[in-house]
Image 1 (cartoon, rainbow, N blue to C red):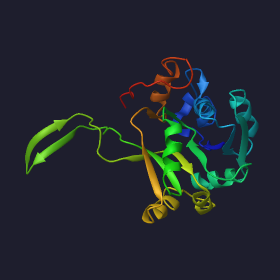
Image 2 (cartoon, one colour):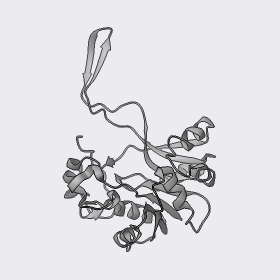
Image 3 (tube, rainbow, N blue to C red):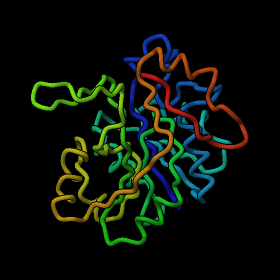
Image 4 (spheres, rainbow, N blue to C red):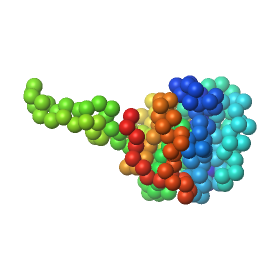
Length: 237
């Protein structure tokens, strides 16, 4: 079983918190972000992980993520190709055909990857994406005409968003763009054809982008170290 980790982010918005490293290698809890994902992939039987990264960073990723279990093969992009293009380019280095995990390398998650795989295997879709509900960063005001009927501080919104964790079949990979973003091209097309399925995730999903979030999680993540991620509440943004 193989997987692709998308790790082309430069961590520019993290500033000094990134310490000059690619975003997926920024350390949280003493380990690179992507190391948690490799460990989770190992736990569900993935033996080979392809890391889509910028050209010239291959050795850096293979050194930082090696030794966890799966073979790490960094695939450098000759030029920026976008998220969809990066996944498609890295997929060419697979040794196996068929379904493959694909994950954004700059997030902290506790998605049940086995359940995601099983959901995909049980449907006839070209791809299955993990979706989550997010909290509003603002208080939400409920109105009855112009009368305030209620006020909810940072409620969980009804809509679902993609959190960048997928199982992709051959059809989906073949339809990924050579350059550009699959979530604005391939996925809308598959959704229109009812060939795209979703796995609902209710647990942890942290996008470590603002420097203050990176700093707050650097010394406290994970809350326990008995293997992989443990369920915790998302921090207040």
